[in-house]
Length: 112
Image 1 (spheres, rainbow, N blue to C red):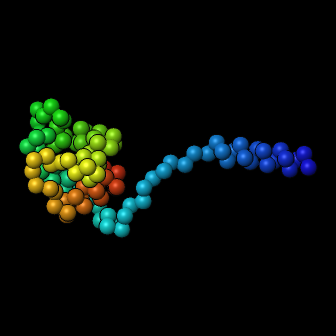
Image 2: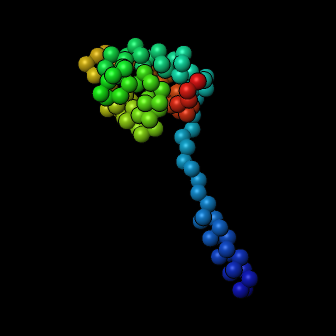
Image 3: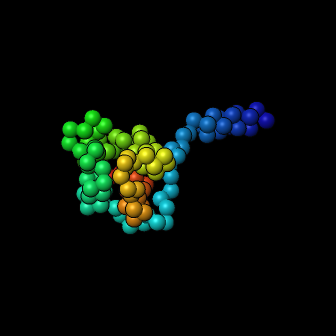
């Protein structure tokens, strides 16, 4: 009986020390790869570059490293997809462009 108790206790401690990283599944709409250089950079330059270009106080989103930081912090997703604050003062992004941005983020926001 003591042996079963020790094995059970050890198993519970071992299992509880394991961590699982939560990852979001890639949606079925995002099975085709989205390229930063061919897709995302073009969208960002055309739709965001006017306010978020070189020398911008809010960050040069045409620079991959800055954009990646905004994506990782959740700021980009919040402002573009949730509150839909961006692009400010301009027309909303077309659904196909929003879809490409969403897929690029789901695929890891790679610099490809």
